[in-house]
Length: 315
Image 1: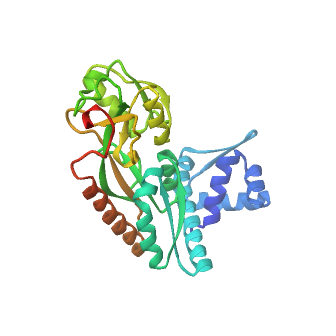
Image 2: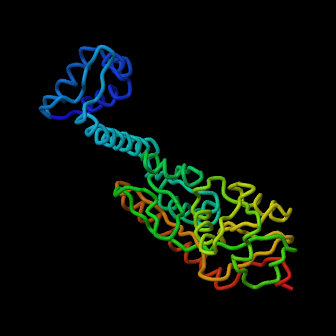
Image 3: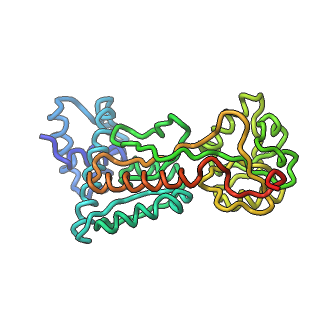
């Protein structure tokens, strides 16, 4: 019969590269490690570790078993954290991740609704790569994420992805830009402009922009990168370049910039909430319901008009 300590031994050997190193990491005597490894190999009736004078390496079968062993051990650790947290606080605990703009506008009403139902919220803020790592490591039970339309974000089948809203991407440019007088700006008119982009070039918004520019035969040149949208507006106002900014992140635009939609098919990012399927069902459903309600409110507020923006087309 498989035991967790058998899987712990396999993982420790893979990490340490020897039985002696695994024994030190687990605070076992080396004969104990040998015993548990023998029991694991007997269970599968196959060698899982190749021993040699310079250490030990997993066999092909051992390498096949390792990710399953790691997933099982991670799931047990998650169960321990959830149950202990609930026992200590006397309430349900939900570990939620969010990126800044969603954390400011989408999440607060949902957190309020959950707290009123006795759910404690442990909040982690970060950019998209941090949130995805937290989900995959099972450190987060849910997270607000964004993606290009149709992306699965490399999440496995243990996660449900609930779409919340489509966040249009708007062009931000200096108020005296040559295109500021236009109601809609053709992307082809921006082929010679510099761009202010996201800190991570793999950001879905930057990928959408690259895709759209490629259709017009050019690649956007990024001269500045930041994830702080207030800084983006500042750099644009100073003439550093133009930028594509999500509507949700725009807030109240500065007086010295112009905000316009791009001509042609609308560019957007999809905002969703990813939920680990093993999360307490009631808490997860309450979160999805509250976020969906708030997203509908925001979409209604947007309507079909741009936020108040400065520039020649507004006068």
